[in-house]
Length: 165
Image 1 (cartoon, rainbow, N blue to C red):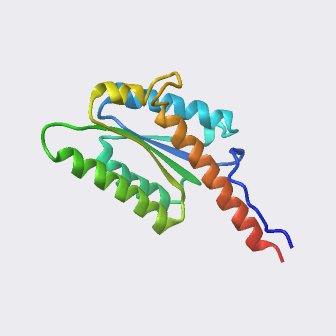
Image 2: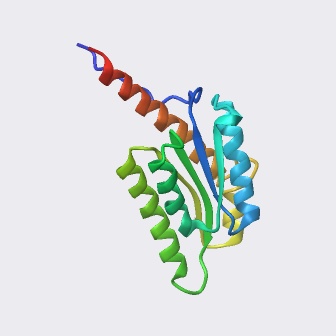
């Protein structure tokens, strides 16, 4: 007997996706958001099925993700933000709690939540990871949107398999 494989495909038709964008470091996060939109569109997610929410900063992303997931407003959530290391431990708290909180929302709700949050030591590193070209850093908005669609498609496949007699 061959194993049953459920692929994580980039098939976004019919998906409702929430894109949460932190406004702190707005020039960086705007590029992440544009790249995420292009990726979602290329995957077949309709523009009217994308819910865009602007969030003050990366620390607030998990709070809004929880609200969206619990409310059934999306099949997947893309969280976009940027945290740049400074001279104090503030970076560690914000970046760590953001990552932990997003993962907690995904695990508790069963809604895929992807982290397109750049954590960089310098502005130059953040710019490289939000560039419009695919350079060394790529664009974390593309990666997060791609992963959100693939995870939602995977969950759909699992749900479909569960319903089969």
